[in-house]
Amino acid sequence: MTGPDTAKSEAGLSLRRLNKRSQFLRAARGNRAGRRAFALQAIASDDMAPGVGFTVTKKVGNSPERNRIKRRLREVVRASAGDFQPQHDYVLVGRREALSEPFGQMVQDLSALLIKVHADKARPNKAGGLRNSR
Image 1 (tube, rainbow, N blue to C red):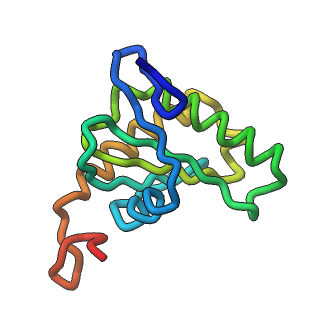
Image 2: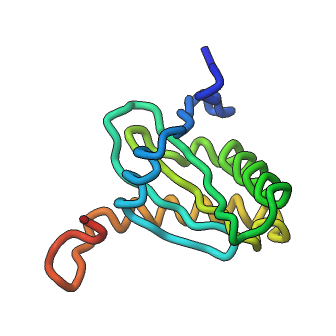
């Protein structure tokens, strides 16, 4: 069953929608990676289904532009739904370049960023602690 806060991918994987501010703040403490059109934040979660949230700041443009960016990011996530790992929350931070970036390139970028944020999981930082552990 899919409700307003879940979506089914072609692979049958359910993606949860992140709605609460606390979920976004928690994801911001996790690993990060970015490309021209958007940045990706990821953190481990207790929920089995992957959670996905979208944000675009007012600096990017007016509300129709921000909404168009969020719509494009939602479609990129649907196209790449099989790449998301269970028990993780993800936040995509849209940038202005998402309006002009080719859709296929954005899908490739998301796949590459998903690999990168999960590869960074255990990389230590210069201070000797784990990367992005706040």
